[in-house]
Length: 77
Image (tube, one colour):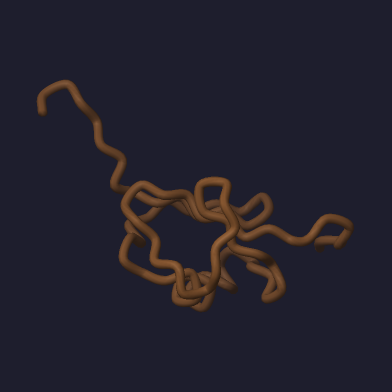
């Protein structure tokens, strides 16, 4: 539709590190494994999609934001 912008990209966040990419159709586990080093994703961090905690099998949809968060009280590097 003319004049409408669709956001098919996904935003992946881990602490101060972010990545925008087309990762829809991949599970949280796949994304964690693929981006663990580039985004410094802690293996014990929880996955949160659009503000809701999800499990490792959750498949990311178009335009969703995935954030890897540490439990409160944990120190980061």
